[in-house]
Length: 434
Image (cartoon, rainbow, N blue to C red; front, side, top):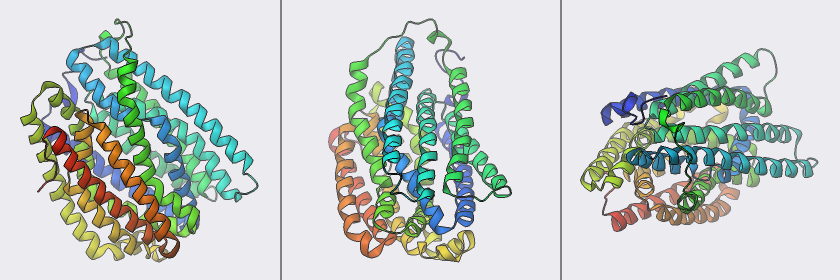
């Protein structure tokens, strides 16, 4: 347990030092995830790896009602509670969050399991086993995101990142390599190993959460502001679901409208394009609690300065990564994944264009959420989701993974431009780097 004012740890480090430390963690996470992706892609092959990606994308869609925007809400509310020192509210919010996530997780798992049982004769055995293993992983990940949200709200960003971003992929990599020497890997086995690594990570997260909560939380009676939390949670729930829906829609629609190999190509291409946003994702996680604190304190000058700093760092870091992928992308794919995955290069180039626009608009989504304008992000996500569905339905049948990439880049560009405009109208804050 720590002092109730939460003064120690990474809260005393300057923002740029926190960002540098978080970027190091995220960089290592990216390297580990690439290693896992490369090993699984090579061991499973495009078709089986496509089943693996399809199952994980389906898990993300099923998990969206369980996450219900809780991580984002927890980061914002815990940071605000710290300012007020309302520890009874913190205790009540933690209990309510775990209870709600667990209840919805159980309902969704039972419903999905029943659906798999009804369609068991219509699914290939490999996909049926993979989706069964996915349901186990789904429940573990749900509890983990709640624990991580509370830890990040307490401004222990690194403490929340290290178990999920370093421990979990490291364990998965070791488990996959070890299992390869003892059995034939398929999609279901890989997902089962992912679940085992995630369970160990969850135990570590719960231990960190207990250690970093203020001592006074045990002596304060629980206080619930359920109405206020639910009012904020509803749009964040919709946003979380829409974001996950939009992000995973390409893979799910590829799995439904195209071949499993196209899913494998897209997953490889997306992992490369995601490198462009590495610094932006890190800075967003670091500054989110500070955005909420500055808004709560009414310090708009500091808020604008923080947003501008994050936007420019993200764009500067994105430029060399984009250039490297454009010039050497084909060679890198062949070297890392093998010749069968070379069709992923064109897909990656289209995704890179969309991610450059994403990087240039800065932490616009976090800024809207942390300043209480989450409804605007819901509107943006709805528009992006509808656009993505229509474009995917038109482009995937003739173009496969490339069509899905065009749909994603188009909708991503539109949603970021819209949110930037709404942030300026609502809060007079300018998010783009230029």
